[in-house]
Length: 323
Image 1 (cartoon, rainbow, N blue to C red):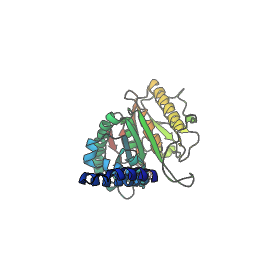
Image 2: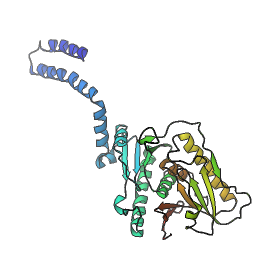
Image 3: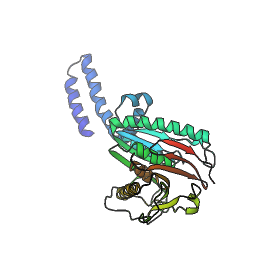
C-alpha cells in the first residue's frame, strides 16, 4: 500500500500545479483509489459471500449465469448447512433447498394426502433444476433425503456431467462433523456380496436388499410381500459413513448396475428395492437405473414400516398400510 500511496502523491504534486476544479477532483479520486483497493483486498472473502448472496436473490438468479447448482435435499432430516452453503455461495453456485418438514408427522411418518403433495412438488422442483442444469451442467448434491427421493433425484439428474457429492459425517466415529465432499480418491473399490442367481426359481418379481449403512432383516422386508424371494446386494463392510470417496461410490454403482442387468437377463420384471444407503450412494444408484431395466420400486422405511414407495422409471408414488 505504501508504494501505491507514494505513486499517488507524486501524481498529486503534478496535478496541483493546475488550480482548476478538475485538478482537485482528480486529486480526490487518486487519493481514494488506493484506499478502496486495500479495503477490498482485506475483505475479499466477505465480499465474495455478499456477492454470492446477491446472485441467489430470485430476480438476479433469473438473469445471472451461475457456475453451478448446489442442491440441498433435506426432505427426511434437517441439519445446519450454513457453513457449506456459504462455501458454495462464494463459488457463485445457485443454492436450492428442498425441505418438507411441515408436511411430516412428529414421528417421521406421512399421511397419504401429504405424501402426494410432497411428490407433486418434488417433481416440479426437479424439472426446474433439470432445465437449469441444461445450461450450467454442474451439480453439487447434499442433504438427508428419504431414500426413494434420493434414488429419484439421481435417476432424473443422471445426465449432468459434473456432479460432486457431499455427505454428512458424525464425530465420532469420523474425525470431523459436518457436511464434506467425498474424497477424490480413485483406486479404492468396494467388495460386494450378492445373492447367487444361478439355480434360483425364475419369477417375475423379487425383493432386493441393498445394504451399506445397516443390515436389513428378512423378517422386516417380508411385510412387503411374504411370498417373494429375497435377494441381497451388500457391501462386505456394512457400516455408517462407509462411503468416503469417489472410488467407492463409482465401484458400488457399477457393480449394482451390472447386477440389475443380470436380473433382467434371467427374466425379472419388477424389483422391490429396500436400502440403507447414505445420500451420495442413493443418488448414484438411482443414476444407474435405465428405463429398459426391470421396474424398480424403492421403498421408504420409517419406524418399522415400509410406508411408501416410488416406481423410479414410471415416476409413480404409492402409499402402503403395511405392518
